[in-house]
Length: 110
Image 1 (cartoon, rainbow, N blue to C red):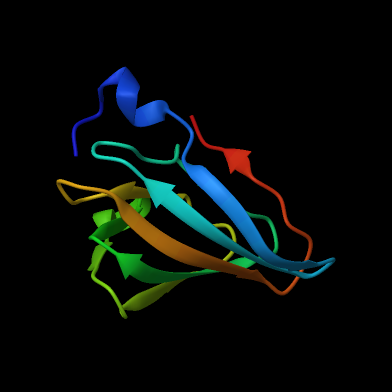
Image 2 (image 1 turned 60 degrees about the horizontal axis):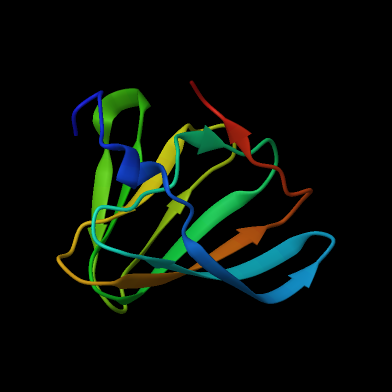
């Protein structure tokens, strides 16, 4: 992916919290064509991505590792890893994000 991305990519995804406790959160994300979350990391929680619809790209900034997830596929990003998720499909993509165990935070990485 290029360093300079269109402004449309920065729009916030549609989200719905499915379940939440102080140490665990399950959120459904819906991304339209070209949409992505910003580069970020979490202090304590591990992100477990599970694709429901379309194709989701999960990328790590360091090392350039990435996954293309199709429905039923998943990947894990440990705490302190700068990452982002984006829609890699022509239509809408949806995924579950299971985060835990620990205090949830969202720290943007410039």
